Image (cartoon, one colour):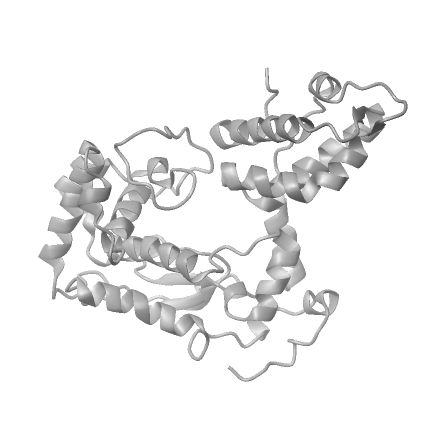
Length: 339
């Protein structure tokens, strides 16, 4: 791509730009060889359908449409930097992460292109599907061996369509010996064997369903960047805890005096370390966890709580507490009290 005029703009100026006017496209960008890699992986399996890819507002395959939309912020380094500033992370920013997401989305495209979800054996293997999207919250079983593990949060367990997509992605991943990896996982291995059988039957076969559609109906990019991020941030701010005063008073129980510091100061000082640790083990979005920490800091200030300075066990206690809140959110959709 030629260097666009908005690359040198500061964040505030860039946020005023309409996404659809940025002139974004996939060809000629570092994403093009990664898309080709997906196509090569499909071809290596004898599959001739290569899902078309477009620039969208997020990772998705429209219901009934065998096409992959890739989020616009991955198209250019300047937009990746803005995404990281606004959301603290960039979904799919590394080559490995990008390809995992592409294999997953390719599975959805194949479902629609070949009407796979209508097959009786598909339904017997993965369950009844529907036009309803994947639920925002579900109750995963982390130790279940009935599902493969590909994307974070045991995503295969969220919906039959996602179960298939995750199984397909594992099956497609080059140099992954899935029979060895899932040996002893009876149900998950049966699903992989079925996908292997199903895809072999589709080798060399063109799609049976290729509806015409307008990209403009699905990309949702005719908004300013500031509007896009206001909406995106709101999605991660929908549910926050009430003030858990009893928990916080127990966690930060020191009385003011020498060798003590304000709990809010401690949290501000260790915020990044806590954020990275909690997100690593929970796989929760950094933006949501960061907002949670901000609320806890604010409440600690209001309660005038203190903590021993340089307590070697304090990081562990606080990380455990915040992790518990986040895991409650993952399982229930709410930041519940710890007891």
